[in-house]
Structures are given as structure tokens and as C-alpha cells.
Image (cartoon, rainbow, N blue to C red; front, side):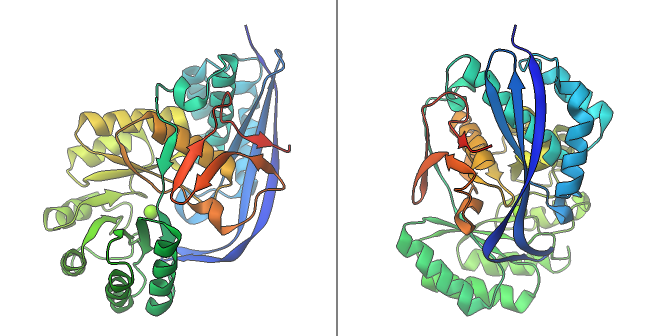
Length: 355
Ligand code: MG
């Protein structure tokens, strides 16, 4: 039986082409952690933990420290003991989803490699192509509209528009973006920036401009407020920062606080927990989106394999890799022909890592 012999982690910092601005903060550079898990049968699995302090409460330093703490839960184990490894990690540290995701992705890479299947097939999928949107960060409304026009010209059909810092600018941005991209599917992400009192009027304005879904209108902890906003919204409401774990998904569904759940590997702890959240959502009749942080193509590939395997994901927001160059480290991951990610048929993630 295959056993893990070693887990190592390495920090990777890369400049962004331009700072990424959202209502919660500014990300100036990619600062992520790559994980390598070696086994006694010669197979190696790769994972990534990409911390976002203002969302998950983690940094690259805490991810490295957590992975060190997880070593006894992983080394000596069979990678297929995924449930037991997650339970052990949860007993060592609560939360810390990005660090757990790094371990989980590497274990999934190993499981699929050991049966010589691409990960999406290992997860039960039959298609290898995933359409992604592209996100437009906060900027002057005219600049955001110019970017929308450029992206649509490049072939994107779905745009995700950041909002939540300035109400008037948000409205102006969506009006100009709709003019610049009349046929695009538009999703808006307020990143917790509104209050329950003001959100219904903003949502009505967005409805007039054909916005398809609005993400995280209120602070993450305000589930009752989000349910109130949803009851008055002409547009489907998606939760992101309000939903990290499978029990969070149950709470949100019971309190009727969302129409769609944005699952991210870095919030929930990887593919194992993401599958649980997606199954809970599907059983309750809620579709899901797979989102990302400022991740390299390594964990973007993991996310795309998951979306390809689970039809309840109606949207993929797997766009971070377009904002920087990770090619020194990730030699190959998938083909990208805007807006489609086409996954490799190689076993596991199909990612060739120089680490
Ligand atoms: Mg979001």
C-alpha cells in the first residue's frame, strides 16, 4: 500500500501585472505556498495554499507553519485515507482552509495518479473543458468599462465586476460596463461592502442593467441581513465569505440566505470539503460557483478538474492566472483558449511543476 514519506513546502512570491483592488483590501503581489508530497512508490503529488488575510485570516507564513504542524497527520498515511487525514488536520488546527487545501490537492493529485486517471475522471467526470469568467477589479468606472470592452473582444462571455467601496461609482461602473459589453453575462461581487438598508435599491438598479447574480452583499457574519436582502432582491444572491465549511452551507440554506454558493478550495480546505459543500447545495436545489484567490495554475487546475466533474457548478471564476506569470514554476497545467480551460489527460492534476 502506498505511503506518504515526506511533505515539503515552499513559498512563492510573484509580482502582479497590476494591483488587484476589492472593497476589502488591495493585493499587490502573489504570495502563495506550494506543497510537495512524496510517497514510497515513487509518485509525487503537488498542492498549493494561497492565503488571503482579509478573507481566510491566513498569510503565507501561517500556511507554512500549519503545514509543518500537519506533518504527523500526513506522513505514513495512505493518500486514500483522505477523510481521516482531514479529521486529523481539523484536530490539530481549526479553520486554516488554505493550508489544508494545499495538502488536500496534493493528496488528490496522488490518488488520481495512482490509478492513472486525470483528476476530473477520478472524481467521476466525463468532460475536460471548463468556461471561466474574468474579474474586473475596482478602478474608475470608465477604466472598468474599457477593460470590459477589451475582455469581450478577447472572447470572454462572462465578466465578474467588483463593487462595494463607493455606491455611486458602483452604479456608474455597471451602466458603462453594460454599454461596453451589451451581450456579456455580468456578475457583481460587493465583497461585504453594503448594508441591508441600502442593498435592495442597488440590486434593483443592477436588475435594470441585466446583472445575473450578486455576490456577498453584506458582511460575512450577517446571515439574517443577507436573507432579508435576498427576500427583496430581483437578482439571485450568491454567498462567498459567508460560506467556508459544509456546516456553513447548511446554515445558509436553512436561513434561506442565498441562491448560489461560491465555493473556494482555499476557504473550505480543498477538494474533499468542496465536494461535500457542493453535494449539500445540490440536494437543497442551489447551484454553485467555483471561485479562486490569487492562485497559480497549479490550484486553478485542481479547481477546474472539480468543476469538470460536478455539473452543479454553473459558474467558474478561475481567472487569477491571467494576472501574472507563473511559468518558471508551473511548466504546464492546461490549455487555455479564452474563455475555455481544457484539462490535460495526463494522470492527476496534469500539472508539470518545477519543484
Ligand atoms: Mg467573492
